Amino acid sequence: MTNPSDSLWVVLKFGGTSVSSVSNWKNVAHVVRARLDEGLRPVVVHSALSGITDRLEQLLSKALTGEWEPVMEQIERRHVDLARDLGVAVCADLERHFTELRKSAAGIHLIGEVSDRLRARVMATGELMATRIGAAYLASDSIDVQWLDARTLLHAEERPGA
Image 1 (cartoon, helix red, strand yellow):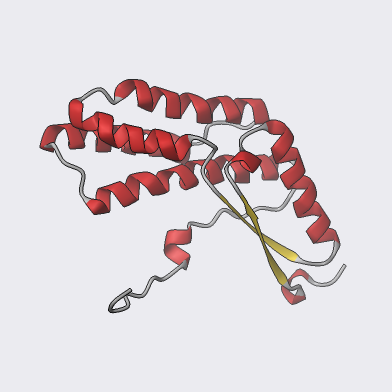
Image 2 (cartoon, helix red, strand yellow):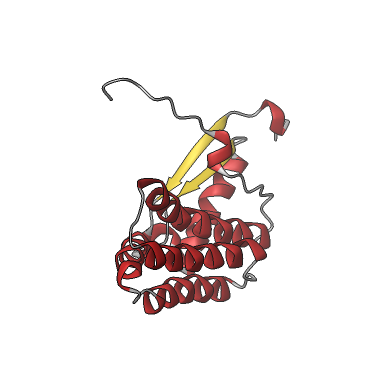
């Protein structure tokens, strides 16, 4: 194998269904290993777990009426169950995301509105939670992993008229 620093990067993008079950994560690990065996440097990018984006939208709307807790419990249970099924611990970062979602929902109920900025923050949490679990699983499967926060790596430029 070539020196990893000399390898070409390859982006592997997986949708929500592809990262929502143990069998699908085994496939993701297989694909990552295959790219590594080819001498490539894979970057894994993936969506929130299937259905979570819809649940996060529900969390926002239910927060306005104060009926958000059952939806939050569904979101949390889905992630905790997947982590358990994959044999990985629920890390402090995942717990922090649960706490932040609960605080956001309580705040929305208190002030009675959802700003665009808060909506974007809540919706991004789906990917953040899922990628924490995914990185932990790949690491537990002896794949050298470094989780990175895309919000610190990507820069959006405002374009007039766009």
